[in-house]
Amino acid sequence: MRILDRYIARAVIGGSLTVLLIIVSMELIFSFVDESGDIDDEYTAFQALLYVALTGPQRAYEAFPIATLIGSLMTLGGMAARHELVVMRASGMSVLNIGRSVMMAGLLLALLAAAIGEWVAPPAERASLDVEAQARGGQVSMLSRDGFWARDGQRFISVGSAPSASLLEDVRIYSFDDERRLQQVITASRARYAGDGWDLHDVQRNRFADGNVDTEWQDSLFWEAGLQPEVLDVVVVDPETLSMAELWTYIGYLQRNELESERYELALWLKIGTPIATLTMLLLTIPLAFGSLRSTGAGQRIFVGVMIGIAFYLSNRLLNHLGLVYGIPPMVSALLPTLIFLTAAVYFTARIR
Image (cartoon, rainbow, N blue to C red; front, side):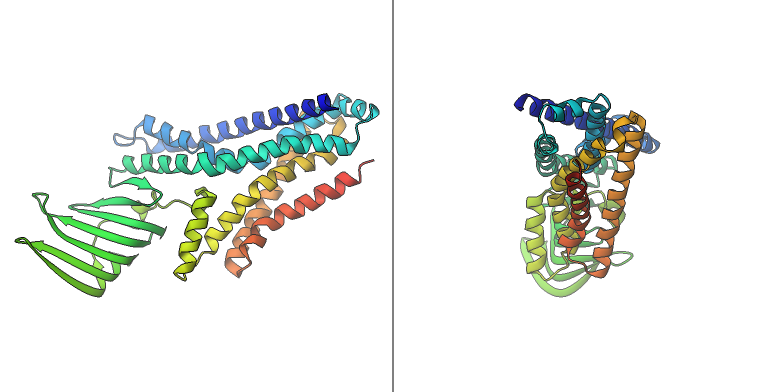
C-alpha cells in the first residue's frame, strides 16, 4: 500500500505543480505584454521584465487552489480512464485509502503554498513595487516593512505606515535649502490628502537658523506638496500581499488606535484559508474521478476543473466584498466559501461505493 500511496501522491503533486507552472507562465507573459506599453526611456524593457518576474510568487500563491484542482483532476481522471483506480480498488485499496493518499499530497502542497505566501511572495512583491517606483523617476524609493521614504523637490518625507495612498501616518518632513542644509523638520502623527495638498495633524515644527532651533506645536497644518496619492500607490502594499505576521502586527496597531482593521483581518483569514482551500480542491477531485469523468477526455476534465475553480473564485470574492460592505465578520466572509466546498467534497466522497 505504501508504494501505491507514494505513486498517487507523486502523481498528484507533479500534475498540480505542472498546471501551476503553466498558469503562472501564461499570467506573466500577458502581464509583460501589458507592461510593454509603458516602456520608454525611463522604464526600460529590463525593468518591466524584472517587475513582472517579481510578481510571480504572489501569482503562484493566488493560483494554488485552482492549479491543484485542475492538476489533481487531470491526474486522477487519467488514472480512472486507464482503469488504474479500478485495479487499486480490486487489490484491496478502498476509496478512503485513495483519498488519504491524495490528502497526503494535498498537505505537502498546502505547506508549500503557505511557505510561498508567508516568506517568498511578500518580499518579492515589495521588490516589484520598488522597481516600479524607481522607474517613475526615483520620486519614491527605499520601500521597507517599516514604511518608506519619498522625495518632493528639496524635501524628504519619511512615512511610518500608509493605511491607504491618501492617508499617511508617522510623517516626518525634512526641508533643505539649495546648499543642502537642513532648514526645518515637520513631524505629524497623520497626513490626509485634501485635493491640492496634505492636512497634517498633531504637528511639531522645528526651524533651524543661525545655530538656533525654533520649535512650535500646531493642531493642524496644511502642506502644499507635489507628492500625490497616485505616486504613493506604488508603495502602499495591498493587504493581500502582506505576510500573516505583518498582518497580525498591523491589525494590532489599528485596533490599539481605534482604526478600521476589517480589510486587514479579512486578508489574514484569507491567508489562513488558502492552504485549507488547496486541500478542499484536491478532495473535490476524488468524487469527480470516480464519477462520470472517468471515461472523458482531458479537455472535458480541464473544462470541469476550470468551471469549479471559477465558481469558487467568484463566490469567494463576492462574499469578501459583501463582508466589507455589510459588516460580516472577516473570518466568516473569508472561510465560508471554502467550508461550503469542503462540505460538498466530503459528502460526495462519502457517497462513492
